[in-house]
Image 1 (cartoon, one colour):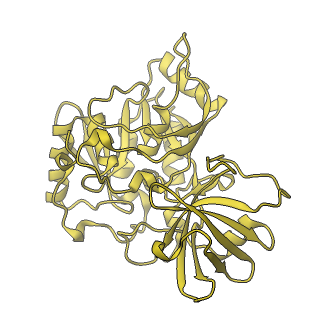
Image 2 (image 1 turned 135 degrees about the vertical axis):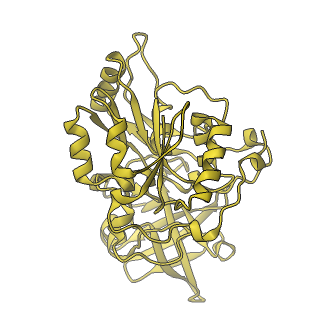
Image 3 (image 1 turned 60 degrees about the vertical axis):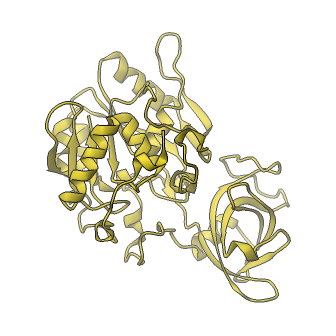
Length: 358
């Protein structure tokens, strides 16, 4: 399978640069496996949910991961994007180290310009935070050690900026619009938002619950691996960047109940799909709680285990996100829907419109 098979023409004016005034006023393209495609408003998603279904949301929160600093000696400007904490062996922990360990915070990051951030380089972010580049990563990032004069997370919250995707060319007035309304402040560890969830309002979620739908929260901390360009020609040769996920006991029990009762599992976003499809089930069919790292890469030919319906945005050409959507909805069906989306002037990417695949 060729990456070029997932290419399509996207006029740049269809790339949404800012969110709509109301989250749930975005458009919703409903794509059933059989039957006609429908064009609705996002708030109409409630019409496709039924009592006994489960709506699964990724409650991660985007951290202020974009740090602006200077290089030691030259004073040249540098931009650092935090990706994930790592332990002393260079492997991610997913959780914060304890206080008082002395060696500082070790992170995998992206640095721009990277050619001037070789191992040994020191970077300064004001008077309270300094970083030393320790190593390069195979993906072109850096491993750095931060030393903070004070609490690291608090300093980052004060000096950092929410990292918008590169295709959004201007800052948004309210950074909270790049957070879901259900983002958990205790789970602030993502470098990008799970953008399919940006369409939900608290009022819409309340109406969905009142209909008898179980709202289930899982967590996957979104890294930039999901959005990295695919640089190989053959789809099967691409390797996904690992991301940390947690599905607790309560969520696992809710998913099990839904399956036992014959309800459908609606996954909101590709991050939720990858999390759910990384889970194991017991001999009795129950969904088992789990946490850890997943690098699951889903593309056409994949057989889904837990997900019955998918809510997602419109994605970049040649992206792993589009490949996942094609795997779920069928290649021909999804690529045809994308042609319709372009023709009907749907808005694309993070602040764009949504698709519901049934």
